[in-house]
Length: 334
Image 1 (cartoon, rainbow, N blue to C red):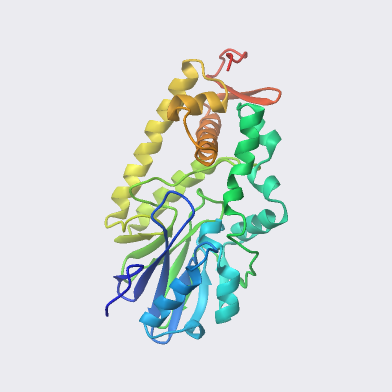
Image 2 (image 1 turned 135 degrees about the vertical axis):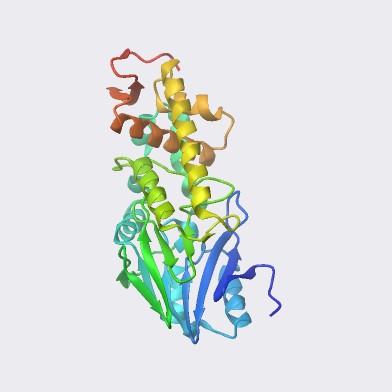
């Protein structure tokens, strides 16, 4: 069948539909899992003009309509993945599933985005100027209106099997990118839908948000788990298909080892705040949204090193400060 530029059959019975996103990526890949008269959708893209029309066109291409959609599985709560969930459910009357930890994250976001994503006081602990801290808090406003609150009909639990006709997809909990991130593995084919857990050629952002403990440690453990499952092909939410997932996992793990060494080196050479370490790693010339992500991933690395006993965290209000064990307590000027 001739398909539009936004759709492609990427595995038997799996259609990829690419939707536009409001940031520097090629798009968000939604997947339609098709078996007989039943369809499961994995993620649904941001709430943007034309997105639902693209999804409808993809359904028409496979001779289907909204009423064939049985369920919507959300890999995680980020708005570029769940933005259309409420409207997809209204049109199809399908059930919506997401891990309970991310259901709670989404609810907190809709209740108070600043508390969920970090306010001025949180970002001031990282070491930027007050003016920059304000810009960092405002940066996610680019996504305002791209998601609406959505009902969750069933929690997606680790190890649960989703039945689609004769096909079965196992839910694999992969925390790190978010607390409740999940993947779907079809054991019979070796195909795994991986959301933002494994990407190529970029690496997923691992942000340390208020209330977190060690998201980078969680992420590394999740990568190791996926590698042990040894999927033969990975279908990510962004970027290109991954033909050798365990190899890509190894590359990402090695990337984080190198980043860890760079973080330690920055601290040894006098960087004390999160902002100082991030500047040593990434430079300074970044728009607020990119700088926000750089700071939060740097914080993930610093806190993982604290958990491992390789760095110490101290406090000099309002700053979080980092040093080698037994190192100096005073920050350098910034």
